[in-house]
Image 1 (cartoon, rainbow over the protein chains, first blue to last red):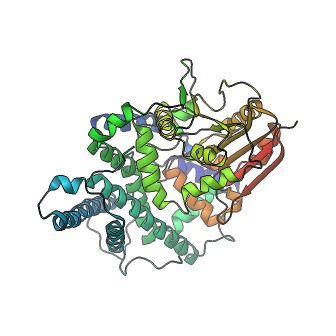
Image 2 (cartoon, each protein chain N blue to C red):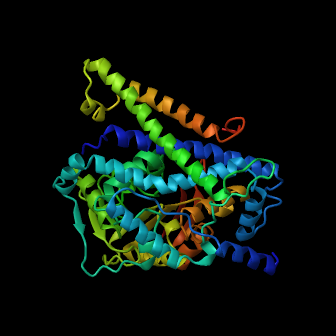
Length: 148
Length: 346
């Protein structure tokens, strides 16, 4: 291993930013997250700095109207939206189920509904299909094929 | 304890877990992309820092890699948040059970003069706010993050893996066992089932996790002796145990702390006592692409000691600590967990 090569690689690694810390919703956890991020930033040795998973170099063969950084923000929002949408889909499915069982619209019953094994298996299967479909949209021809 | 979640928390945590499963699929696609670009065992550099640069450069235009990174980042930024949210939505039902735990035989000792090592505050696994960052982190991490999400996404069965590690102990007649870094007690439960007549002790730096472990033990009627102390300096009497063990602790520690932990285990064991530490697979037993993927994940997850721990010669460290008959091996079929074992000479 050439010494210069190694030094250069470490210098590049040292310039990288740490990935963002979670953005929790409660006031307490927001403050904790800020404190944690600040502490980590101050103490992180250059050699083990996290690689940037931020800026993505645009492919010149494709049209890009957004800055690369914003593209990732859009992707992040897209995944968040997928999560939110699944929550709604799940809720509707449960609501229908509860209505079937009790004949009344009862949000309280939906909130506290604990899926029986058979219904849980159905929800699990639908959710997994849903998640794969959403992520597949990030690829021109669906999820890449891989060995199991 | 009743732990059923309201619909939103249940659905969101399930979604986060399933996203992790798709992430596993993309991880395999990234490997394929790397190989398609001519990088593999013969062409990846032996130096890990250089290997990172090689892979980053080669995968600049890999959709699988870019999407994998984006998903991984989303997971890192949302896993704990989703668990916090699920807890908050259920606080009214969960908190009364947590603040008034069942009484029972388990004890928790929290010495006033505890000296928590610096690495633990800032680096011990990436959990938003730290292990004591939420008053009910024991429930949040143990049940919502670990059991619900990690239990779904991690290869194999994380609880069966703990049982297997406990079963790897050379004897079945231990009388006094110490679980170092016991957390909420998932491995401690395996030990209790495997060695039902043994006196079980557990140490950890997190008061929140230990309080939840105590709750679990009392609920089951198990007389665990829990102590909030660093594993390197437990304050427990020398020669008290015939088996000292840990599960998935070492990769969170700098090598200096691993040495100190082994030294403490040696001190705590009676002559002829056994040591068994289960941890992550050694880098030298993984192929170069898998090592790069693991090492880069550890970077993103801010697990700064993973590399030095996963490349350390554990058998040598155990020998230096005084242990004999040391063994260092991976459990089939995935070389996971990795087992380090040894015996204190008689």
